[in-house]
Image (cartoon, helix red, strand yellow):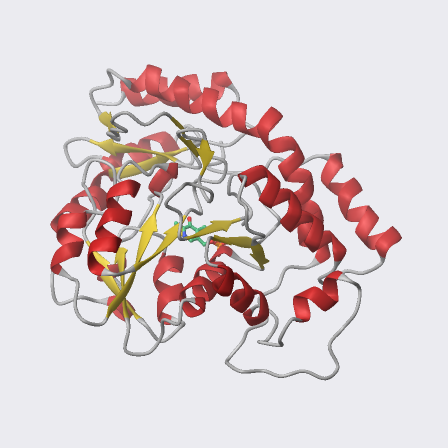
Length: 375
Ligand SMILES: *Cc1c(COP(=O)(O)O)cnc(C)c1O
């Protein structure tokens, strides 16, 4: 049983075929424009998003687009994919590793507050396992310390808070999604930047095309720039028509087919594992907020130091599990001179169970049963 997997069929092939054999333009053009328009409508943002070749490049451009780079610091939870850290350091800024809450791996603002300096310019908030309980507190914190907010929403595409989608909440600054091979929707690889800052959106749309001014607008009309200006370091981070075709197809299938599957399978895990002695579910509290969480991954916390034992045990039954994530402050490149005990505790206990739309209820029952039986 695979830990994660994309949900694909002949429909993606039809979308790709149109680009290959009808449009015959594989690079960035009208298909990318359509994908951006459809994403905008789906998320419900008043602003046109900018898509990129990966989620990591979306994060990097968002940081650069805020004018953050050398001599700047960005607060970020240590417990995230290394992509969040790499995106920050790629701009020349320093990622400052912060503690998470050991019961759900969301950013610990008390710890973050201790790490604010004169150089701190932004906070990168990670929607771990598609959750965002303390997002409003993050925006309050950011206002207090005059920081920008970049939401690493790689896990939470399609999630809703009080009737609005992540990427279009009232308080939203800048939000990045990932469309890599196993995320809630995929383009093969891909990413998107949503923002309420129009200047940032214009800047990142140039930055993704080597900084060539207004090149996006030309390419969307099937033209190219021959005489132009460049004012800063840009990157080759745009999305191709082929990737966009896959994304458009996935977006069509998402609400009716993929999302209900993720919801019902994760709900089943919650029911079956509620009383399991060997594991605890993550704890979340949305107070009075009504939310729709569409889990991208399903991590649990294993009791009594038996995480690796349980992982090996499940492997015997061909059940593949994961560990999300290795703390970044323990990596050679990002090593800190302070420890983060809650983060390290979470890392030692966490085990991610298989979850993707190709799994059946029987699969979830089997995994849950093996966990309940595990001593
Ligand atoms: C997937 C992911 C990213 C990066 O996205 P890519 O599209 O793989 O580059 C960033 N942050 C988190 C938390 C992720 O899970």
